Image (cartoon, rainbow, N blue to C red):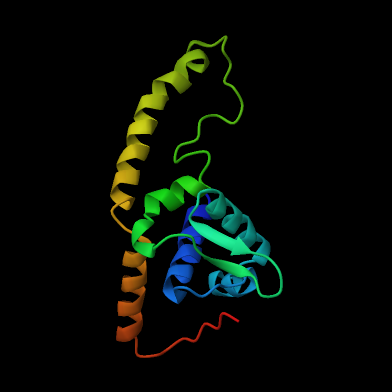
Length: 151
């Protein structure tokens, strides 16, 4: 995985889990992630399509979790935003006139699927509620308090 979509999505969902029943605007979430609001809106659309977040538009709109934080796993978030999977195959079809090119994708596919399943099983043991609890523990132990306004 050579991008940060999953990490950004986990950040977004952890923030929404942290604020509970409140809604947050993409601009506020983007300040926490330290990215452009367009990136956050794109992420929110994928998460909404997967039923993880619910968003409303307009001046009083925003996004919130669509279900309890304890019911959302990191694997579910991963699958919502990583359409190519952990190990994407060739972006262009390999040369089928070459013995390797003709068969490499089929040879790799079972191993890639097994690796992704193992990874998803491992991260599937962590819920958004777990992330929020870890964040709260880390914040309580921190000598300084950072203020993140979600207005």
